[in-house]
Image 1 (cartoon, rainbow, N blue to C red):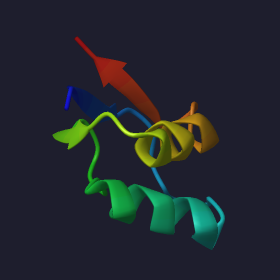
Image 2 (cartoon, rainbow, N blue to C red):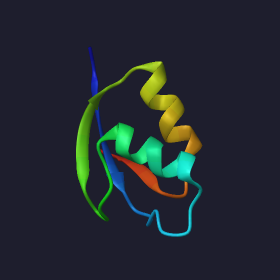
Image 3 (tube, helix red, strand yellow):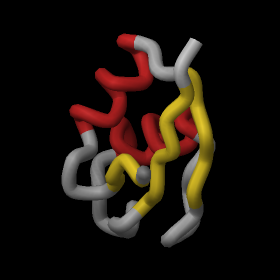
Length: 58
């Protein structure tokens, strides 16, 4: 299965608890950290909920 790289570009400070939990679920939590995840609908959905905090890196 394909992999995608996700980078955190926004801070979770003063964000709802649900958004913080999504970040932790993706393996993020610190600014500018990059993780590699399987490209599944669940991961894409999590990214879609945080467009202001994460981006996909090539």
